[in-house]
Length: 116
Image 1 (cartoon, rainbow, N blue to C red):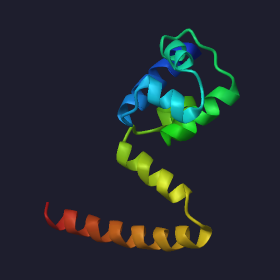
Image 2: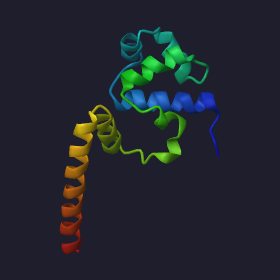
Image 3: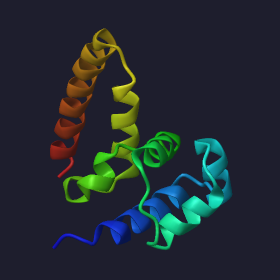
Image 4: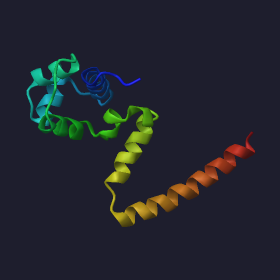
């Protein structure tokens, strides 16, 4: 069942902001918006424009997919951070990292299967 949009945004923002260790005031400062805007959104009363959401999401270093498609995410901070790091890579870096990751995962899985 889909959550009401304002409630979903309020919960996402509050959870995400606290996960990254930002206060409402600090998030507002870094995003260049008023702290009362953050307070309103987190209380479920705000209906922010794109020009408000965009800098907040960028400051939080989160994919907008975690807000709009939460059911598709495993809610793993490590996987989200990994995805964010990879997203900042060049195509060449991504190809190299992919090859390394595939080899490391294969080795880890072999070790795990032997230890069972």
